[in-house]
Image 1: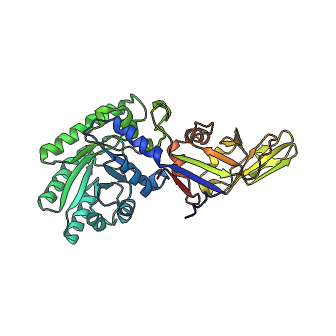
Image 2 (image 1 turned 120 degrees about the vertical axis):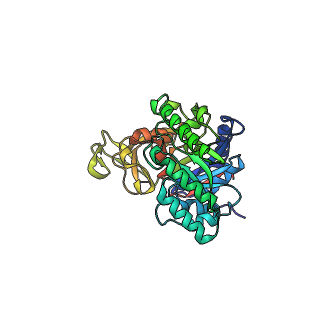
Image 3 (image 1 turned 135 degrees about the vertical axis):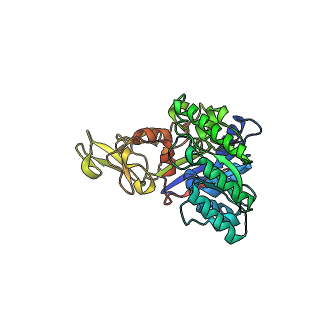
Length: 382
């Protein structure tokens, strides 16, 4: 069979070998009894949920985690049926029945959610696997400490009736990516207190967990029974304060590449892209890169985003448009079709997702996650 050539306009190369290596690195950072939940929400942070889930499981992950129930159900539909899958962002009317039938672990943060999942269990005749989420200080989803006794008591009653099984107790950090932030110790204290209440009341969870990527890397006291690496699994540092990907022993999984669509010579004083925020100082050459904000290239990086073209790092000249942007090639004349690398691991001189995050005043999570469906994913190392 003839191999399909990689897309020429643009592509996101996904190195599954790097992902597997990252999972093994994370495994080595936790105690042998601690399980790993590979977080594959948001289409695996833009990398492709099903393929990344399978690669993570191959490398030793024990659980999968998603945000929405639809993401979790898609994993089941793809044939990933023999591992626990947790989903945590439920809204009223979501498909609790399907979640029960698919054996999902479903997060419950308040009485309304427990009531809906109990009703679904009655309808389906199944037992719902639920994990109670504690709001220990993040202030998003999760049950406040003052409401925790009521939620725990109601969950235990539903468990006694055979309608639910409380499989987990969990929470999420607000500032684990800021070393020594005082909220970290405060949240751990609150979490331990809420665990103590639930367990004394009779909850026997399979897993207790609070550690995200930065806590997995830096806070062994927060590992409990399970850790939930997300961005670290994809080889991106959770924050500059924790170190670069290389310093953390991780390798970026995604590389974003395109083919230069046009190279042309222009005179001095020539405006470039919308608004003419960039005007050439001298006679020069311009290269057109066929990626834009519709593909996830941040418009906020206009005039600042770095791109490797023909061995030299160039900068986006003028505004990023919907489908394309321009780089000033400084008189060089690479052939049309020459590869332009927006970001990658960085070991061949190319920019990284962190470099683009700096250019766009955002975080690297957003850079990789926002790469749109119009950019084909090409999988390496399957």
